[in-house]
Length: 586
Image 1 (cartoon, helix red, strand yellow):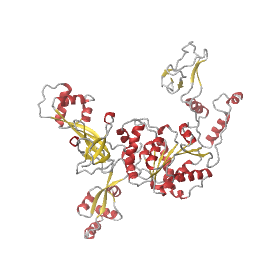
Image 2 (tube, helix red, strand yellow):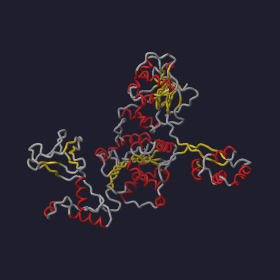
Image 3 (cartoon, one colour):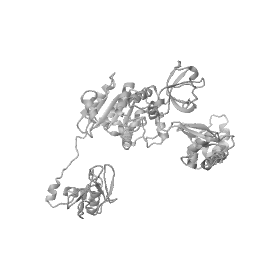
Image 4 (cartoon, one colour):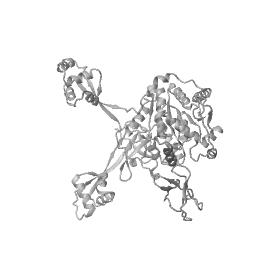
């Protein structure tokens, strides 16, 4: 008898431990696979994950329950991810079930429900909602809880429980695992048959819809939907040909593509010439790939120093060695530009994952990575759990960003998880930033991390910046919030049909409201900071606690009517630029 160590998917510390189940002979046990198991005194059906297998029972054999079924025919968790989950459980003081749920692909978790049906006991004396719910169940034979909630509101559960306790209603547990696999029907010619030509020639001579199907498929198999769309036909001619034995229809599992290979793929062959700093960085990182004990690296490079090219060179080296790479970006909005850059270099070896993809698309990318169909995955924080079995390098771009710290349970930190994965798999961790976090930079300075500095831009050019002293502008009689130099540049851009960005890190219209008579400044009682005046709503808003106040017509201290707005926010900039440049679209 084989016994499985199972973690049940109940997020409670009291049950956050291994439960041993026996494996029936008809089930092939898979380490890391999800299983359906009976749990507790009522043998409630629960989802669980096998994290260990043995031939030795840990408790009395008569107390060990059998596994009901496998939920997947492949392991969801590898030995590495199981070890990583155990480490995360201890490191972040959470449950193993929580961590496994975080690592598991989104959308495939088992959903539990209870279906209610009436018993043979005669219902008497029922009133109110109990009577209504009982009648509804009786009329519909079997009803799930969700349907009852929709019909009778949130109190339907307590009503159902009362009917169950009276013996009038049976509760049967049901479970559902969402199938995210995309299956497409393909149409093939049965041209291997000896009588194919004999059967097809009369049809082709008719030159009708059936003939058009045969002619189209003679060029190769096609998806059933594409055949119908291309020829503008219904199912009828295809079904007729299938019955005649000239066609066969097969359902094929198809994996969704989420990356369009860049049109500039040809340019990828012309690799840019590296600067001296880039070459030194690439050489040092490639040498680090060969080190038996790998130390993480921090690339401290100014914006425009070519860190991305260094990332791509080290990934290219990893792929040439038969390995795989995870490229982490801090937010979803940065993913498309990263994908375009990397797909131009690596083609269909690249894929992407993030929360804006559908659950099916994300699951397909997970399967592609698991099966080795891709070598590079790009994505935000969750991409760290990609099931690569030949992981060579993890790159964390803009490592200082707060989005690399999970704010929901389990509250993990990507840098620490990546370093632990490095210990488990032997992969290299590379972090990059122009403004690294204090802790990471300190670790680099003290030798815990390798430090690579890139201080020069690739094109050697810094942007032209002109600082204008607004005191001089005031002395020249310019009372506007725009300097003369800026206005001239704006007008020239408008004349040349170019665009301009005006940036100010102050929301609202005016940064404070003050009385000209007594000097009182309107402040938030909660935060002791100035209110900001927002012209769109006509209200004073605290940007700390979001408290709102109406704009006073008179000073609340001295009663003066000379209460005015001071300071410039983005709304004021917008208001004034529209007045000064009425022909501009702002």
